[in-house]
Figure (cartoon, rainbow, N blue to C red):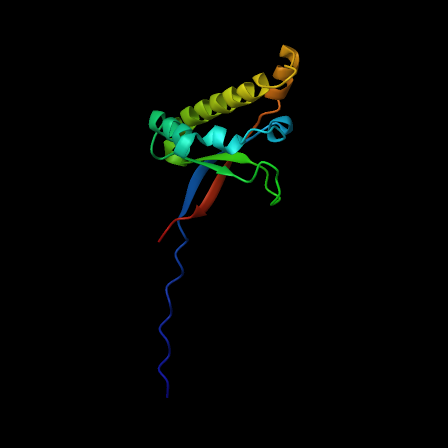
Length: 141
């Protein structure tokens, strides 16, 4: 006869890790410009992102995702991600990232011929979309 299997212990609840996420989207008019916006935002060899991380904290991650023409169904945007514990670094990096995006948008607009009126420039800047969320993922085991 087979021995009865010993009762297995109840499964432990999986540990989760919370990350703060900030997504920054560019105004459509900027994505339609001839400039390589990804290159502008990342900087040479991602130097712009590296600069933000050096001013904030190594716990912060910055990634440019999607393409400028949105061909793959994912339009160019930037994701800032940090562990929940690094909230202060996340906020600092977010501020620097938004400043960077604004500077790049302004730079692209200033190259336009004919130049935009100040009010029109401001209207485009107002279309920079910043959204925050919290992502909960399984902790690596």
